Image (cartoon, rainbow, N blue to C red; front, side):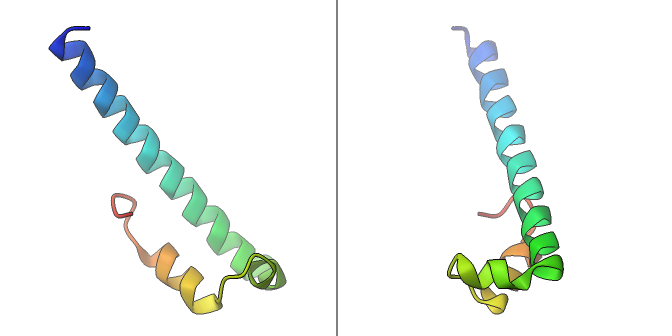
Length: 60
């Protein structure tokens, strides 16, 4: 694999990770609004969820 191919693969992986985080945080926020009991069922607090959804997509 050439350097260019490797760089493009790394970039695709980065974008994929960012897209996954956006989707996850959107779903988490939606769950918090529509079914807050599910958040408790998975062992998270409302504060933990709010902290997670407040993060920008590029942050872990």
